Amino acid sequence: MSADTNLMSIPGAIDPVPVPRGAKPRADGRIELVGLSKDQIRAEFEAAGLEPRQAKLRAKQVWHWIYNRGASDFAAMSDIAKPQRPWFAERFVISRPEVVEAQVSSDGTRKWLLKTHDGHDFEMVFIPDADRGTLCVSSQVGCTLNCRFCATGTMQLVRNLEPGEIVGQVMLARDALGEWPSQPEGRMLTNIVMMGMGEPLYNFDNVRDALKIVMNGDGLGLSRRRITLSTSGVVPMMARAGEEIGVNLAVSLHAVTKEIRDEIVPLNRKYGIEQLLEACAAYPGANNARRITFEYVMLKDKNDSDEHARELVRLIRKYRLPAKVNLIPFNPWPGAPYECSSDERIRAFSNIVFEAGISAPVRTPRGRDIDAACGQLKTAAERKRKSAAVVQGA
Image 1 (spheres, rainbow, N blue to C red):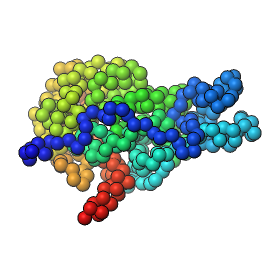
Image 2 (image 1 turned 180 degrees about the vertical axis):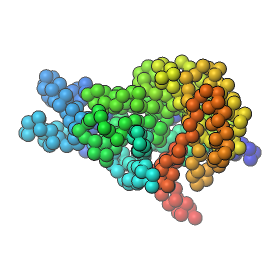
Image 3 (image 1 turned 135 degrees about the vertical axis):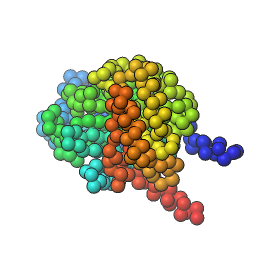
Image 4 (image 1 turned 30 degrees about the horizontal axis):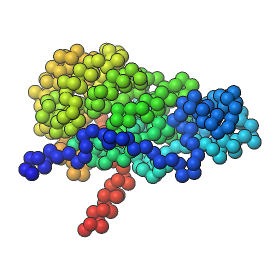
């Protein structure tokens, strides 16, 4: 094998595992209610022995306690008869992902290392700003896409996160911010981005079901206008995302030529730039009021020339895309094969796009000191396991 081939080799499959791996059942046999729709909760109550009318009433009450009051214990549910509460507690559970570690950056960014009930680690990040607070939510444990600039992409895909584990991240953030009972006004957590670990469109059903609960007016009540789903370009699922979820779309573009995107976003070898931009043009609901965001990480001497900026403008115009471009200074990590473009180069790139009438802000890196910045999510536990393996193999 030549040195060039070695350089371009991809440590894993470009496609997801053929059969998504699910979570193991809880060791205690109880059924998790977080992540279930109101109808699913009612059905579980009926299956456990409640008569239909009683199951419907209790489902409505429990739903309210979970999503409006933030309850995680049936004992707190004052409108359910005291003798009945232990019956629910024996059969059902209302849980959050376990917090292994919580860190706060010097800029106020918070990062949590979380653990699923079956022992897998993943992360979420909260980014506070003056006018908003954004929660970066993970959809998978690990990732299968192997984007070469992304630390998370160097991890193996372990499994998809369940709807309850996705919703649970939002609820855990609400716990930490003291935002129960739910209030539509004055929240610190105002926005959600599906930009954490994993490719959301390779876990489509679970992400859709979780976000429906987040957007439900009787649930967590976040507007779809305040939720953004990011994809690396899983073209066949993009239309479904627009139709069935209907949130804002962000696309991890990062390059404007086949050769460069093939290298840094290997999924491009399956769904090329032209296919991807056609899918963006057809995305339901995209318009000038709801623009598609193109994420573009700035890599020194790789994708950051004036010519690349002009080609980006040409492509956006060719497909008549209602778009804005987020320019992301590359966040280095140990072993990364790239460097960040200089501030001058990033400004020059941004100016070319701006002068063409397309918004191209430079994203201020947040949480770099706790490895919480874009592309850095890779759990501390994963690092510890690799370090232990190196020591054992020495």
